[in-house]
Length: 108
Image (cartoon, helix red, strand yellow):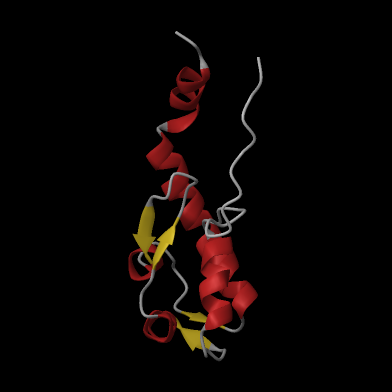
């Protein structure tokens, strides 16, 4: 039995980015200078909805900052490092944890 080859559609991205990788893309496109406060970052980026999992669930940047204790960042790396655990927590919470993922993989 033959399988039809995948369609070549150049409109779709080759990879799906989420979490700090998706935020990094927003930061690369923005004219933002550091040091910056959370307010300056949100205003500079326009408070984007950042995907935090592979299924495309999103959280606004301002809402993600609610869970960050630090209010000012000296550079982009410091900002991304502060937000990484926040996006991970959203991802784990939305997925329902390990057991839900395991059940989804089982055929019954």
